[in-house]
Length: 115
Length: 115
DNA sequence: ATAAACCCTGACATTAATGTCAGGGTCAAG
DNA sequence: CTTGACCCTGACATTAATGTCAGGGTTTAT
Image: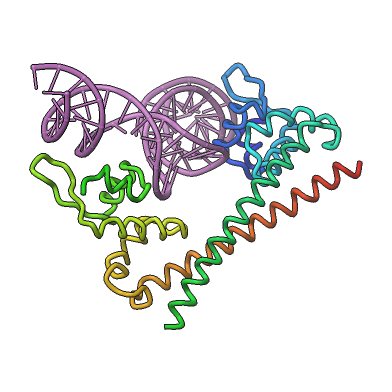
């Protein structure tokens, strides 16, 4: 299929599909006219990419294990767990920071409303 | 005082002090040689700016009420509360999103460790 | 053969505060 | 009068994925 169809099937913009290819997350073969041609498997692959992006994993990190997880069960890919754990730590840090700010904001709001 | 001293006193980089001025958070008078000269009050003003930035408030928002809060008690400045409340909502949304991701991450980690 | 719909590359824009560099004045102490 | 420590402006870079535009080819249907 061509890029427009892949985009329509997955809901991912053409621009993003080209970007994924540049980041080595996705491959295509070129037809004589220069158009990209995708295998039917690409649709699932794009959904997988989107799933990991939704977890806040960067394209660079995804590139490091995507080849494996497309062929095996995720548990079999040793690169995945450390990345998940790193991301989890980052998220926890961010949550903590946001709570700090929230607490400060609530203090300020309270002190305004009291006066 | 000149910009280097203000920077040293507040711990805020010279670059940032110039940026605050450009964003109309800070003023200075120019000496004959073109150097900025700051009033002693600037030190406190810079700390106030830093405080609001630490709450995640943008320079544009700060600019909208800084004049007031420098002259009055914060509670007196009507622009402040809506901005606090808006920011609080943004923070809550972000916290919520992060929890969603965290929950997904924990699921994946668990499913890897179970296998 | 022409219009519409598709595809290509390359480039700039987006956010927000800050870092950093280049090229150039100013001033004080030696 | 020179050196070093200040100061100035203007500009580009940073992050990461995506949007958008220009300028140009291709294909399909009429």
